[in-house]
Length: 314
Length: 322
Image (tube, rainbow over the protein chains, first blue to last red):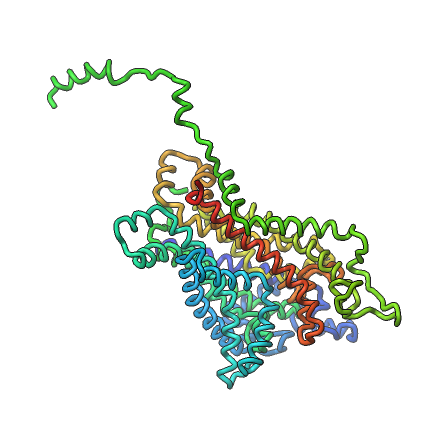
């Protein structure tokens, strides 16, 4: 297991390097007009050149790349160039990340608890009343575009419950609605897959054997069905936890939460190279670690899964 | 056992234990034949499910209608801007009427025609991307999950493609060539299979070392046969469920891309464009029809695929066959 972990970690470092270099070069392929927003036409060619030179964008790409990695190894993410010029990236991110992570984790906890409970009830009562009610919810959430039901939630729920429409750091009541509406799709997702996996599992022969030998229905559910049904979902858990850092574009723009949602998209479209590189470094590292931890978690839940090479395996 | 006894036994054996079996054609037919066919039974169980069949019919007719609609009499062009005959100005935000069945949008285009043209575009994108996702994603995912020698390589490919933001690729493509139906499909195909591949891989990792696969390996079954006969059939039900979600998922993705400003150009109507156009008018209740009509079509598609997927998943489990 230790050898496997070390191999995966070494490989991850290589992957992050490839991703970062690729993104670095791709950003340099974008047209230079992008660095000036609307001011491009108003500037003299010399002005433009001065600005580009001061940003270090006129050097050959390999020199830029070398400078970037040299800085990175000193632990310096650099300064933003367009988004908030001359502000260190670490300062921008440390102000934004806590919001996204707090909302994301709350929403995730809600979706896990409610979603799994819903899925279990559905599987136990397949085809009966609660199964139909919850299926209706799942279908609704999947069917209506998120952009649409979220905006309606904001409009109607705030008018009925008198909760504040926009997020306000100082008012705890303004935290509720964003967190709850962020969990809507998560609840539906967990419930849907939990139901599917449990229904498939309940059909298997070993369940019949467990019934025949007189195990109680609850014991079968908890010890056999739920544990087996949760394994494929466990793979995605670490990724979801780590991904909360990237925020939710829809929710954060609707409630004007100063989080990370949409920051990467914005940074790319205004061509803030250093900010894009920092974000890609963080997101890709977390994404890669998430995939690895997911594998480990899956192996923990189901000891039959062996990650290392075993005799005869291909 | 003494040597003497052994001798007597072997003397009997020679004659009695090994006799050639007579080949009997009738006997071989009596047992070896069953008219059970997996896919035949799956489809039969699926067709028993009335709501799923209704959804299937709705989807087929919806797709057919989007193609027939432009040739029906009295249809308008989806990108023509209509003018008010009295004032000569653009017929903006005209509510649904006899002439404009679903009303007109903020620049005076006929919403009825736009919705069907948009549904055609979105469904086509979703089907093409969906088929690619299924074929490529399952093949890649199965190899990724089962063949450990490929694990490092494919994990690498997955992580690299997954972590390069789609936004950069879309912006570069938009810079190199005009964003269109084709570029959209290209980008979605390039990244869309990743989710399916990871899903299939996880499922396969769970079952790859179960005893029956170990036994198969001991008997020297080739990898391709293990994947095709041992692993994938076991996973049909969950994979079908995932496929059913991938078509509405692709449409939702297109809505999202339009939301962040990387969707199709405005002169190519699609459900993504229409929903986003409608979303901007949400504050004025009299104009909400512009959001409700496209959302309704989108919801119909998603609900149908969800119900069909669930029904097919149940049907694909041989324990539900008879």
